Length: 64
Image (cartoon, rainbow, N blue to C red; front, side, top):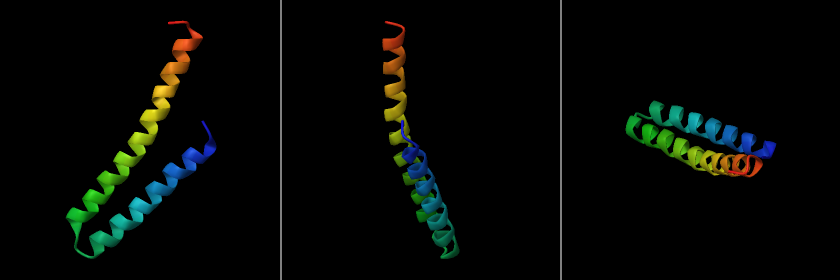
């Protein structure tokens, strides 16, 4: 795992937070919520890939 993944996740978090605030100020609460959910889903897909790699490596280490 590379440190750039952490920076990518942080960048998505910052971008979603800014968009959320802008949309709420514009009176578009529903779209702000959808933007937040989309950001969470993108990050979850990234994290799931790395968790899968972790489980594979644990299986190879313990010969399961």
